[in-house]
Image 1: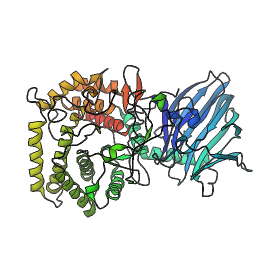
Image 2 (image 1 turned 30 degrees about the vertical axis):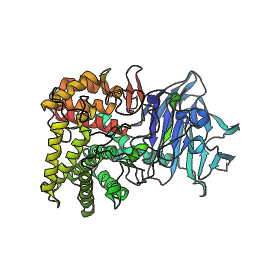
Image 3 (image 1 turned 45 degrees about the vertical axis):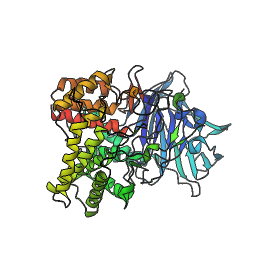
Image 4 (image 1 turned 120 degrees about the vertical axis):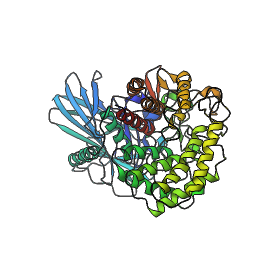
Length: 590
Protein backbone atom coordinates (compact mmCIF):
# COMPACT_ATOMS: atom_id res chain seq x y z
CA UNK A 1 0.00 0.00 0.00
CA UNK A 2 1.28 3.45 -0.91
CA UNK A 3 2.03 6.03 1.77
CA UNK A 4 -0.71 8.38 2.93
CA UNK A 5 -1.03 11.52 0.82
CA UNK A 6 0.22 13.67 3.70
CA UNK A 7 3.40 11.58 3.84
CA UNK A 8 4.64 13.16 0.60
CA UNK A 9 6.83 16.20 0.19
CA UNK A 10 7.40 18.13 -3.03
CA UNK A 11 10.71 19.08 -4.57
CA UNK A 12 10.76 20.90 -7.89
CA UNK A 13 12.40 23.30 -10.30
CA UNK A 14 9.39 25.48 -11.26
CA UNK A 15 8.84 23.27 -14.29
CA UNK A 16 8.11 19.90 -12.76
CA UNK A 17 8.41 18.20 -9.40
CA UNK A 18 8.78 14.92 -7.57
CA UNK A 19 6.73 13.58 -4.68
CA UNK A 20 8.93 11.92 -2.06
CA UNK A 21 7.46 9.97 0.85
CA UNK A 22 8.67 10.17 4.43
CA UNK A 23 10.18 6.71 4.02
CA UNK A 24 12.41 7.87 1.18
CA UNK A 25 10.47 6.78 -1.91
CA UNK A 26 10.12 8.92 -5.03
CA UNK A 27 6.69 7.63 -6.04
CA UNK A 28 5.68 10.30 -8.56
CA UNK A 29 7.86 12.12 -11.06
CA UNK A 30 6.81 13.44 -14.47
CA UNK A 31 9.40 15.12 -16.65
CA UNK A 32 10.25 17.56 -18.10
CA UNK A 33 6.95 19.21 -17.06
CA UNK A 34 4.27 18.49 -14.51
CA UNK A 35 1.93 17.34 -17.29
CA UNK A 36 4.52 15.10 -18.99
CA UNK A 37 4.35 11.29 -18.77
CA UNK A 38 5.84 9.78 -15.64
CA UNK A 39 9.15 8.10 -14.92
CA UNK A 40 7.91 6.98 -11.49
CA UNK A 41 4.19 6.26 -10.99
CA UNK A 42 4.08 4.01 -7.91
CA UNK A 43 1.80 6.63 -6.34
CA UNK A 44 -0.97 5.31 -8.59
CA UNK A 45 -0.16 1.64 -8.20
CA UNK A 46 2.80 -0.23 -6.78
CA UNK A 47 6.57 -0.17 -6.97
CA UNK A 48 6.24 -2.12 -10.22
CA UNK A 49 4.92 1.09 -11.83
CA UNK A 50 8.13 2.99 -11.11
CA UNK A 51 9.81 4.04 -7.88
CA UNK A 52 13.14 5.25 -6.55
CA UNK A 53 13.65 4.21 -2.93
CA UNK A 54 16.52 5.47 -0.76
CA UNK A 55 16.64 4.66 2.95
CA UNK A 56 18.84 3.08 5.63
CA UNK A 57 18.96 -0.72 5.61
CA UNK A 58 18.11 -0.74 9.32
CA UNK A 59 14.39 -1.68 9.42
CA UNK A 60 14.03 0.20 12.71
CA UNK A 61 15.34 3.48 11.27
CA UNK A 62 13.21 6.55 12.01
CA UNK A 63 13.01 9.80 10.10
CA UNK A 64 12.05 13.43 10.57
CA UNK A 65 11.99 16.00 7.80
CA UNK A 66 11.80 19.67 7.02
CA UNK A 67 12.47 22.14 4.26
CA UNK A 68 15.85 23.85 4.46
CA UNK A 69 14.82 27.35 5.54
CA UNK A 70 12.61 29.11 2.96
CA UNK A 71 13.47 26.81 0.06
CA UNK A 72 12.14 23.74 -1.72
CA UNK A 73 15.13 21.67 -0.58
CA UNK A 74 13.82 18.71 1.41
CA UNK A 75 15.94 17.52 4.35
CA UNK A 76 15.25 14.11 5.87
CA UNK A 77 17.13 13.13 9.02
CA UNK A 78 17.52 9.39 9.54
CA UNK A 79 18.36 7.89 12.93
CA UNK A 80 19.43 4.25 13.14
CA UNK A 81 20.93 1.94 15.73
CA UNK A 82 24.41 2.67 14.34
CA UNK A 83 24.29 6.34 13.48
CA UNK A 84 22.58 9.41 12.04
CA UNK A 85 22.54 10.72 8.46
CA UNK A 86 20.72 13.39 6.47
CA UNK A 87 19.41 13.30 2.92
CA UNK A 88 19.03 16.57 1.02
CA UNK A 89 16.75 16.24 -1.99
CA UNK A 90 16.15 18.96 -4.53
CA UNK A 91 15.87 19.87 -8.17
CA UNK A 92 18.40 22.50 -9.33
CA UNK A 93 16.60 25.57 -10.58
CA UNK A 94 17.20 27.78 -13.58
CA UNK A 95 19.94 25.57 -15.02
CA UNK A 96 18.39 24.57 -18.33
CA UNK A 97 18.28 20.84 -17.50
CA UNK A 98 16.26 18.39 -15.39
CA UNK A 99 18.05 16.83 -12.43
CA UNK A 100 16.70 15.15 -9.32
CA UNK A 101 19.38 15.15 -6.63
CA UNK A 102 19.61 13.07 -3.44
CA UNK A 103 22.66 14.07 -1.35
CA UNK A 104 23.37 11.76 1.63
CA UNK A 105 25.62 13.06 4.42
CA UNK A 106 26.78 11.23 7.51
CA UNK A 107 26.21 13.04 10.81
CA UNK A 108 27.35 10.53 13.46
CA UNK A 109 28.32 6.86 13.66
CA UNK A 110 27.78 5.04 10.39
CA UNK A 111 24.63 4.40 8.38
CA UNK A 112 24.31 1.84 5.60
CA UNK A 113 21.89 2.87 2.86
CA UNK A 114 20.13 0.89 0.16
CA UNK A 115 18.70 2.35 -3.02
CA UNK A 116 16.14 0.54 -5.18
CA UNK A 117 15.54 1.98 -8.65
CA UNK A 118 12.63 0.91 -10.87
CA UNK A 119 12.24 3.12 -13.95
CA UNK A 120 8.98 2.82 -15.91
CA UNK A 121 8.51 5.50 -18.56
CA UNK A 122 5.26 6.81 -20.09
CA UNK A 123 2.99 6.19 -17.11
CA UNK A 124 4.56 2.74 -16.59
CA UNK A 125 3.74 1.64 -20.13
CA UNK A 126 7.40 1.47 -21.20
CA UNK A 127 10.11 -0.55 -19.48
CA UNK A 128 13.33 1.15 -20.62
CA UNK A 129 16.42 -0.37 -22.11
CA UNK A 130 18.97 -0.07 -19.30
CA UNK A 131 22.76 -0.31 -19.57
CA UNK A 132 25.78 0.43 -17.46
CA UNK A 133 27.40 3.70 -18.49
CA UNK A 134 30.12 4.26 -15.94
CA UNK A 135 33.31 6.17 -16.75
CA UNK A 136 36.40 7.30 -14.91
CA UNK A 137 34.12 9.87 -13.26
CA UNK A 138 32.18 7.12 -11.49
CA UNK A 139 29.40 4.55 -11.91
CA UNK A 140 26.35 5.43 -13.98
CA UNK A 141 23.24 3.77 -15.35
CA UNK A 142 21.54 4.85 -18.57
CA UNK A 143 17.89 4.09 -19.38
CA UNK A 144 16.17 4.79 -22.71
CA UNK A 145 12.63 4.29 -23.99
CA UNK A 146 11.29 6.15 -27.01
CA UNK A 147 11.91 9.89 -26.66
CA UNK A 148 12.97 9.71 -23.02
CA UNK A 149 16.29 8.93 -21.40
CA UNK A 150 17.71 9.27 -17.92
CA UNK A 151 21.17 8.74 -16.53
CA UNK A 152 21.60 7.90 -12.86
CA UNK A 153 24.96 8.62 -11.30
CA UNK A 154 26.54 8.33 -7.90
CA UNK A 155 26.67 4.70 -6.76
CA UNK A 156 27.02 1.38 -8.51
CA UNK A 157 23.61 -0.11 -9.32
CA UNK A 158 23.25 -3.77 -10.22
CA UNK A 159 20.37 -5.47 -12.00
CA UNK A 160 17.98 -7.78 -10.21
CA UNK A 161 15.40 -8.49 -12.89
CA UNK A 162 13.89 -5.13 -13.84
CA UNK A 163 15.16 -3.55 -10.61
CA UNK A 164 18.55 -1.97 -9.96
CA UNK A 165 19.94 -1.90 -6.43
CA UNK A 166 22.91 -0.32 -4.78
CA UNK A 167 24.43 -0.08 -1.29
CA UNK A 168 26.73 2.41 0.39
CA UNK A 169 27.70 3.61 3.86
CA UNK A 170 28.18 7.15 5.16
CA UNK A 171 30.09 8.32 8.21
CA UNK A 172 30.56 11.83 9.66
CA UNK A 173 31.45 14.34 6.95
CA UNK A 174 31.15 11.68 4.22
CA UNK A 175 28.80 12.71 1.40
CA UNK A 176 27.38 10.54 -1.38
CA UNK A 177 25.51 12.24 -4.22
CA UNK A 178 22.90 10.36 -6.25
CA UNK A 179 21.58 12.19 -9.30
CA UNK A 180 18.97 11.32 -11.89
CA UNK A 181 19.14 13.43 -15.03
CA UNK A 182 16.44 13.35 -17.71
CA UNK A 183 17.19 14.23 -21.33
CA UNK A 184 15.85 13.61 -24.82
CA UNK A 185 17.02 10.17 -25.93
CA UNK A 186 18.15 11.52 -29.30
CA UNK A 187 20.43 14.11 -27.66
CA UNK A 188 23.84 13.61 -26.03
CA UNK A 189 23.60 12.86 -22.34
CA UNK A 190 24.29 15.87 -20.09
CA UNK A 191 27.56 16.21 -18.26
CA UNK A 192 27.64 15.18 -14.58
CA UNK A 193 26.12 17.80 -12.30
CA UNK A 194 28.29 19.79 -9.91
CA UNK A 195 26.03 19.00 -6.97
CA UNK A 196 27.70 21.35 -4.49
CA UNK A 197 27.35 24.36 -6.76
CA UNK A 198 23.81 23.38 -7.75
CA UNK A 199 22.78 23.06 -4.11
CA UNK A 200 24.21 26.47 -3.24
CA UNK A 201 22.58 28.12 -6.24
CA UNK A 202 19.21 26.48 -5.59
CA UNK A 203 19.29 27.47 -1.91
CA UNK A 204 20.22 31.06 -2.79
CA UNK A 205 17.56 31.28 -5.53
CA UNK A 206 14.75 30.21 -3.23
CA UNK A 207 15.85 32.26 -0.21
CA UNK A 208 16.24 35.34 -2.42
CA UNK A 209 12.76 34.79 -3.85
CA UNK A 210 11.18 34.17 -0.45
CA UNK A 211 13.03 37.17 1.00
CA UNK A 212 10.92 39.42 -1.24
CA UNK A 213 7.63 38.19 0.21
CA UNK A 214 5.66 41.16 1.53
CA UNK A 215 3.77 39.85 4.55
CA UNK A 216 3.38 40.58 8.23
CA UNK A 217 0.78 39.13 10.54
CA UNK A 218 -0.46 35.82 11.88
CA UNK A 219 0.53 32.50 10.32
CA UNK A 220 3.58 34.10 8.69
CA UNK A 221 5.61 30.90 8.31
CA UNK A 222 2.73 29.06 6.65
CA UNK A 223 2.08 32.04 4.35
CA UNK A 224 5.71 31.92 3.21
CA UNK A 225 5.52 28.16 2.67
CA UNK A 226 2.26 28.48 0.74
CA UNK A 227 3.67 31.19 -1.53
CA UNK A 228 6.78 29.09 -2.15
CA UNK A 229 4.51 26.19 -3.08
CA UNK A 230 2.51 28.39 -5.45
CA UNK A 231 5.76 29.53 -7.06
CA UNK A 232 6.81 25.91 -7.44
CA UNK A 233 3.59 25.26 -9.38
CA UNK A 234 4.32 28.21 -11.71
CA UNK A 235 6.37 27.48 -14.82
CA UNK A 236 9.56 29.54 -15.15
CA UNK A 237 9.52 29.32 -18.93
CA UNK A 238 5.90 29.72 -19.97
CA UNK A 239 4.25 31.50 -17.04
CA UNK A 240 1.56 28.80 -16.79
CA UNK A 241 0.41 27.92 -13.26
CA UNK A 242 -0.82 24.36 -12.67
CA UNK A 243 -3.63 23.52 -10.27
CA UNK A 244 -1.70 20.67 -8.60
CA UNK A 245 1.33 18.46 -9.10
CA UNK A 246 -0.61 15.19 -9.44
CA UNK A 247 -3.38 13.35 -11.22
CA UNK A 248 -6.04 10.96 -9.94
CA UNK A 249 -5.46 11.17 -6.20
CA UNK A 250 -8.97 10.38 -4.98
CA UNK A 251 -11.55 12.73 -3.53
CA UNK A 252 -13.20 9.56 -2.21
CA UNK A 253 -10.88 6.71 -1.27
CA UNK A 254 -11.63 3.71 -3.43
CA UNK A 255 -13.99 5.78 -5.58
CA UNK A 256 -13.99 7.21 -9.09
CA UNK A 257 -13.74 10.96 -8.33
CA UNK A 258 -10.17 11.04 -9.61
CA UNK A 259 -9.09 13.90 -11.86
CA UNK A 260 -5.97 15.22 -13.56
CA UNK A 261 -5.04 18.63 -12.14
CA UNK A 262 -1.66 19.13 -13.86
CA UNK A 263 -2.98 21.85 -16.17
CA UNK A 264 -3.55 25.58 -16.10
CA UNK A 265 -7.11 26.48 -15.11
CA UNK A 266 -7.77 30.14 -15.87
CA UNK A 267 -9.67 30.39 -12.59
CA UNK A 268 -7.04 28.84 -10.33
CA UNK A 269 -4.19 30.60 -12.10
CA UNK A 270 -5.94 33.97 -11.79
CA UNK A 271 -6.48 33.46 -8.06
CA UNK A 272 -2.86 32.33 -7.66
CA UNK A 273 -1.86 35.46 -9.53
CA UNK A 274 -3.76 37.62 -7.05
CA UNK A 275 -2.08 35.89 -4.09
CA UNK A 276 1.39 36.45 -5.54
CA UNK A 277 0.70 40.04 -6.65
CA UNK A 278 -0.69 40.94 -3.23
CA UNK A 279 2.60 39.84 -1.68
CA UNK A 280 5.03 41.66 -3.90
CA UNK A 281 5.45 39.57 -7.06
CA UNK A 282 4.18 41.79 -9.84
CA UNK A 283 6.55 40.27 -12.43
CA UNK A 284 4.72 36.95 -12.08
CA UNK A 285 1.55 38.73 -13.20
CA UNK A 286 3.28 40.09 -16.28
CA UNK A 287 4.60 36.63 -17.15
CA UNK A 288 1.18 35.04 -16.73
CA UNK A 289 -0.54 37.79 -18.72
CA UNK A 290 1.74 36.97 -21.66
CA UNK A 291 0.88 33.28 -21.19
CA UNK A 292 -2.82 34.18 -21.29
CA UNK A 293 -2.51 36.14 -24.52
CA UNK A 294 -0.63 33.28 -26.18
CA UNK A 295 -3.08 30.64 -24.94
CA UNK A 296 -6.23 32.45 -26.03
CA UNK A 297 -4.51 33.85 -29.14
CA UNK A 298 -6.78 35.66 -31.59
CA UNK A 299 -10.14 34.00 -31.08
CA UNK A 300 -11.82 34.59 -27.73
CA UNK A 301 -14.89 32.72 -28.99
CA UNK A 302 -12.89 29.51 -28.57
CA UNK A 303 -11.62 30.25 -25.08
CA UNK A 304 -11.19 27.17 -22.88
CA UNK A 305 -11.42 27.00 -19.12
CA UNK A 306 -7.98 25.32 -18.99
CA UNK A 307 -4.90 24.80 -21.10
CA UNK A 308 -1.62 22.93 -21.03
CA UNK A 309 1.36 24.52 -19.34
CA UNK A 310 2.49 26.20 -22.56
CA UNK A 311 -1.05 26.94 -23.70
CA UNK A 312 -1.85 23.60 -25.37
CA UNK A 313 -5.53 23.05 -26.13
CA UNK A 314 -5.79 19.28 -26.60
CA UNK A 315 -6.42 17.94 -23.09
CA UNK A 316 -8.71 15.05 -23.99
CA UNK A 317 -9.52 12.91 -20.96
CA UNK A 318 -8.31 9.32 -21.13
CA UNK A 319 -8.16 6.43 -18.69
CA UNK A 320 -5.09 4.31 -17.95
CA UNK A 321 -6.53 0.89 -17.03
CA UNK A 322 -3.09 -0.66 -16.44
CA UNK A 323 -2.64 1.59 -13.38
CA UNK A 324 -4.77 0.37 -10.44
CA UNK A 325 -4.94 3.82 -8.85
CA UNK A 326 -3.95 5.23 -5.48
CA UNK A 327 -4.85 2.51 -2.95
CA UNK A 328 -7.18 1.06 -5.58
CA UNK A 329 -9.07 4.24 -6.50
CA UNK A 330 -9.76 3.83 -10.20
CA UNK A 331 -9.86 4.94 -12.90
CA UNK A 332 -6.57 6.76 -13.29
CA UNK A 333 -7.10 9.64 -15.71
CA UNK A 334 -4.85 11.85 -17.80
CA UNK A 335 -6.30 14.86 -19.51
CA UNK A 336 -9.50 16.39 -18.20
CA UNK A 337 -12.94 16.24 -19.81
CA UNK A 338 -13.92 19.52 -18.16
CA UNK A 339 -11.88 21.25 -20.87
CA UNK A 340 -14.99 21.11 -23.05
CA UNK A 341 -17.32 22.60 -20.47
CA UNK A 342 -18.73 26.10 -20.39
CA UNK A 343 -18.05 27.57 -16.97
CA UNK A 344 -19.52 31.03 -16.77
CA UNK A 345 -17.36 32.22 -13.89
CA UNK A 346 -13.94 31.80 -15.53
CA UNK A 347 -13.67 35.08 -17.41
CA UNK A 348 -14.80 36.99 -14.32
CA UNK A 349 -11.99 35.45 -12.26
CA UNK A 350 -9.51 36.18 -15.04
CA UNK A 351 -10.51 39.84 -15.21
CA UNK A 352 -10.40 40.13 -11.41
CA UNK A 353 -6.86 38.78 -11.40
CA UNK A 354 -5.76 41.15 -14.13
CA UNK A 355 -7.32 44.10 -12.33
CA UNK A 356 -5.45 43.15 -9.16
CA UNK A 357 -2.24 43.30 -11.18
CA UNK A 358 -3.29 46.62 -12.68
CA UNK A 359 -4.02 48.02 -9.23
CA UNK A 360 -0.61 46.85 -8.03
CA UNK A 361 1.10 48.82 -10.78
CA UNK A 362 1.33 46.51 -13.81
CA UNK A 363 1.17 48.73 -16.88
CA UNK A 364 -1.74 47.86 -19.12
CA UNK A 365 -0.69 47.24 -22.70
CA UNK A 366 -3.00 48.04 -25.63
CA UNK A 367 -3.00 44.37 -26.63
CA UNK A 368 -3.74 43.13 -23.10
CA UNK A 369 -6.65 45.52 -22.61
CA UNK A 370 -7.96 44.65 -26.08
CA UNK A 371 -7.96 41.02 -25.00
CA UNK A 372 -9.91 41.86 -21.85
CA UNK A 373 -12.49 43.80 -23.84
CA UNK A 374 -12.87 40.83 -26.17
CA UNK A 375 -13.36 38.57 -23.15
CA UNK A 376 -16.13 40.85 -21.88
CA UNK A 377 -17.78 40.53 -25.29
CA UNK A 378 -17.76 36.75 -24.84
CA UNK A 379 -19.38 37.10 -21.43
CA UNK A 380 -22.15 39.12 -23.05
CA UNK A 381 -22.52 36.62 -25.91
CA UNK A 382 -23.13 33.82 -23.38
CA UNK A 383 -25.12 35.88 -20.93
CA UNK A 384 -28.22 33.66 -20.91
CA UNK A 385 -26.35 30.35 -21.10
CA UNK A 386 -26.46 27.89 -18.17
CA UNK A 387 -23.09 26.49 -17.20
CA UNK A 388 -21.28 23.69 -15.35
CA UNK A 389 -20.06 25.98 -12.61
CA UNK A 390 -16.88 26.34 -10.58
CA UNK A 391 -17.06 22.70 -9.45
CA UNK A 392 -17.20 21.41 -13.04
CA UNK A 393 -20.49 19.61 -12.54
CA UNK A 394 -20.96 16.70 -14.91
CA UNK A 395 -24.72 16.89 -14.53
CA UNK A 396 -27.17 19.20 -16.28
CA UNK A 397 -25.93 22.81 -16.73
CA UNK A 398 -27.62 25.32 -14.43
CA UNK A 399 -27.74 29.02 -13.70
CA UNK A 400 -25.27 28.76 -10.83
CA UNK A 401 -25.36 31.81 -8.59
CA UNK A 402 -21.59 31.92 -8.16
CA UNK A 403 -21.15 31.92 -11.93
CA UNK A 404 -23.70 34.68 -12.33
CA UNK A 405 -21.88 36.74 -9.69
CA UNK A 406 -18.61 36.30 -11.56
CA UNK A 407 -20.33 37.42 -14.75
CA UNK A 408 -21.37 40.49 -12.77
CA UNK A 409 -17.71 40.87 -11.75
CA UNK A 410 -16.56 40.67 -15.37
CA UNK A 411 -18.73 43.62 -16.37
CA UNK A 412 -17.80 45.43 -13.16
CA UNK A 413 -14.07 45.13 -13.91
CA UNK A 414 -14.72 46.45 -17.39
CA UNK A 415 -16.48 49.49 -15.96
CA UNK A 416 -13.70 50.02 -13.42
CA UNK A 417 -11.07 49.74 -16.14
CA UNK A 418 -12.63 52.73 -17.85
CA UNK A 419 -13.68 54.81 -14.85
CA UNK A 420 -10.79 54.18 -12.46
CA UNK A 421 -7.88 53.54 -14.83
CA UNK A 422 -8.90 55.67 -17.82
CA UNK A 423 -8.97 52.83 -20.34
CA UNK A 424 -11.18 52.92 -23.41
CA UNK A 425 -14.29 50.83 -23.67
CA UNK A 426 -18.08 50.85 -23.30
CA UNK A 427 -18.62 51.62 -19.61
CA UNK A 428 -22.25 52.67 -19.98
CA UNK A 429 -23.18 49.46 -21.80
CA UNK A 430 -21.19 47.30 -19.39
CA UNK A 431 -22.77 49.06 -16.42
CA UNK A 432 -26.22 48.33 -17.83
CA UNK A 433 -25.32 44.64 -18.23
CA UNK A 434 -23.78 44.55 -14.76
CA UNK A 435 -26.93 45.97 -13.20
CA UNK A 436 -29.09 43.56 -15.18
CA UNK A 437 -27.13 40.57 -13.84
CA UNK A 438 -27.35 41.92 -10.30
CA UNK A 439 -31.13 42.23 -10.60
CA UNK A 440 -31.33 38.68 -11.92
CA UNK A 441 -29.29 37.32 -8.97
CA UNK A 442 -31.41 39.31 -6.53
CA UNK A 443 -34.52 37.71 -8.02
CA UNK A 444 -33.41 34.16 -8.87
CA UNK A 445 -30.30 33.58 -6.78
CA UNK A 446 -31.90 34.28 -3.39
CA UNK A 447 -34.39 32.04 -1.62
CA UNK A 448 -37.43 34.25 -0.85
CA UNK A 449 -38.32 32.30 2.29
CA UNK A 450 -34.95 32.25 4.06
CA UNK A 451 -33.37 35.27 2.40
CA UNK A 452 -30.15 33.40 1.61
CA UNK A 453 -28.24 32.98 -1.62
CA UNK A 454 -28.78 29.60 -3.31
CA UNK A 455 -26.58 27.30 -5.35
CA UNK A 456 -28.52 27.88 -8.57
CA UNK A 457 -31.83 29.30 -9.69
CA UNK A 458 -34.70 27.02 -8.68
CA UNK A 459 -33.15 25.30 -5.65
CA UNK A 460 -32.95 26.07 -1.95
CA UNK A 461 -29.56 24.36 -1.60
CA UNK A 462 -26.45 26.38 -0.77
CA UNK A 463 -22.92 26.01 -2.08
CA UNK A 464 -19.63 27.06 -0.49
CA UNK A 465 -18.68 28.97 -3.65
CA UNK A 466 -21.22 31.59 -2.49
CA UNK A 467 -18.58 32.64 0.05
CA UNK A 468 -16.77 34.26 -2.88
CA UNK A 469 -19.52 36.83 -3.50
CA UNK A 470 -18.27 39.41 -0.97
CA UNK A 471 -14.66 38.72 -1.94
CA UNK A 472 -15.31 40.08 -5.45
CA UNK A 473 -17.43 42.97 -4.18
CA UNK A 474 -20.88 41.71 -5.16
CA UNK A 475 -22.14 42.25 -1.62
CA UNK A 476 -20.82 43.15 1.82
CA UNK A 477 -19.53 40.46 4.17
CA UNK A 478 -22.27 41.42 6.63
CA UNK A 479 -25.04 41.61 4.03
CA UNK A 480 -28.08 39.89 5.63
CA UNK A 481 -28.32 37.53 2.66
CA UNK A 482 -24.68 36.57 3.16
CA UNK A 483 -25.14 35.99 6.88
CA UNK A 484 -28.15 33.78 6.18
CA UNK A 485 -26.10 31.87 3.61
CA UNK A 486 -23.31 31.34 6.12
CA UNK A 487 -25.77 30.00 8.68
CA UNK A 488 -27.06 27.44 6.16
CA UNK A 489 -23.54 26.42 5.14
CA UNK A 490 -22.75 25.88 8.82
CA UNK A 491 -25.88 23.78 9.22
CA UNK A 492 -25.58 21.62 6.08
CA UNK A 493 -22.03 21.73 4.71
CA UNK A 494 -19.81 21.68 7.79
CA UNK A 495 -18.69 18.23 8.91
CA UNK A 496 -15.98 17.61 11.44
CA UNK A 497 -15.50 21.35 11.68
CA UNK A 498 -14.54 21.80 7.99
CA UNK A 499 -16.55 22.93 4.97
CA UNK A 500 -17.80 20.82 2.06
CA UNK A 501 -18.33 22.31 -1.39
CA UNK A 502 -21.99 21.26 -1.68
CA UNK A 503 -24.20 18.30 -0.84
CA UNK A 504 -23.38 15.55 -3.33
CA UNK A 505 -26.57 13.71 -2.36
CA UNK A 506 -28.64 16.15 -4.41
CA UNK A 507 -27.24 14.60 -7.59
CA UNK A 508 -26.47 17.95 -9.20
CA UNK A 509 -22.88 16.96 -9.98
CA UNK A 510 -23.91 13.92 -12.00
CA UNK A 511 -21.47 11.59 -10.21
CA UNK A 512 -21.79 8.66 -7.86
CA UNK A 513 -20.20 8.70 -4.42
CA UNK A 514 -19.31 11.37 -1.90
CA UNK A 515 -16.28 13.47 -1.06
CA UNK A 516 -14.53 15.06 1.90
CA UNK A 517 -14.44 18.67 3.15
CA UNK A 518 -12.76 20.99 0.66
CA UNK A 519 -9.92 22.98 2.17
CA UNK A 520 -10.27 26.05 -0.05
CA UNK A 521 -13.92 26.37 1.02
CA UNK A 522 -12.88 26.13 4.66
CA UNK A 523 -10.39 28.95 4.21
CA UNK A 524 -13.06 30.99 2.40
CA UNK A 525 -15.18 30.60 5.52
CA UNK A 526 -12.28 31.88 7.64
CA UNK A 527 -12.17 34.99 5.46
CA UNK A 528 -15.93 35.42 5.78
CA UNK A 529 -15.82 35.10 9.56
CA UNK A 530 -12.91 37.52 9.88
CA UNK A 531 -14.43 40.24 7.70
CA UNK A 532 -17.96 39.97 9.10
CA UNK A 533 -16.95 40.55 12.72
CA UNK A 534 -16.59 36.94 13.91
CA UNK A 535 -12.89 37.07 14.71
CA UNK A 536 -12.90 34.37 17.40
CA UNK A 537 -14.68 31.96 15.04
CA UNK A 538 -12.20 32.87 12.30
CA UNK A 539 -9.21 32.13 14.53
CA UNK A 540 -10.69 28.83 15.70
CA UNK A 541 -11.50 27.66 12.17
CA UNK A 542 -8.13 28.80 10.86
CA UNK A 543 -6.34 26.75 13.52
CA UNK A 544 -8.44 23.71 12.65
CA UNK A 545 -7.86 24.13 8.92
CA UNK A 546 -4.13 24.72 9.27
CA UNK A 547 -3.88 21.44 11.17
CA UNK A 548 -4.76 19.64 7.92
CA UNK A 549 -1.40 20.59 6.42
CA UNK A 550 1.28 17.93 6.59
CA UNK A 551 4.50 18.32 8.56
CA UNK A 552 6.00 20.25 5.64
CA UNK A 553 3.16 22.76 5.43
CA UNK A 554 1.58 21.30 2.27
CA UNK A 555 -2.18 21.28 1.75
CA UNK A 556 -3.99 18.77 -0.42
CA UNK A 557 -7.38 19.36 -2.01
CA UNK A 558 -9.57 17.81 0.69
CA UNK A 559 -9.35 16.32 4.17
CA UNK A 560 -10.93 13.17 5.57
CA UNK A 561 -11.95 14.25 9.07
CA UNK A 562 -12.99 10.75 10.09
CA UNK A 563 -9.64 9.13 9.34
CA UNK A 564 -7.57 12.28 9.86
CA UNK A 565 -5.89 12.15 6.45
CA UNK A 566 -5.48 14.27 3.34
CA UNK A 567 -7.46 13.47 0.19
CA UNK A 568 -7.36 14.61 -3.43
CA UNK A 569 -4.54 15.99 -5.52
CA UNK A 570 -1.54 17.58 -3.84
CA UNK A 571 -0.13 20.08 -3.29
CA UNK A 572 -3.25 21.95 -4.33
CA UNK A 573 -2.83 25.55 -5.51
CA UNK A 574 -6.42 26.51 -4.66
CA UNK A 575 -6.00 25.36 -1.04
CA UNK A 576 -2.77 27.30 -0.61
CA UNK A 577 -4.00 30.51 -2.20
CA UNK A 578 -7.27 30.40 -0.23
CA UNK A 579 -5.20 29.98 2.93
CA UNK A 580 -3.10 33.03 2.02
CA UNK A 581 -6.23 35.10 1.48
CA UNK A 582 -7.60 33.95 4.84
CA UNK A 583 -4.34 34.88 6.56
CA UNK A 584 -4.53 38.31 4.93
CA UNK A 585 -8.09 38.74 6.19
CA UNK A 586 -6.97 37.92 9.73
CA UNK A 587 -4.08 40.35 9.43
CA UNK A 588 -6.41 43.11 8.27
CA UNK A 589 -8.68 42.70 11.29
CA UNK A 590 -6.07 42.18 14.01
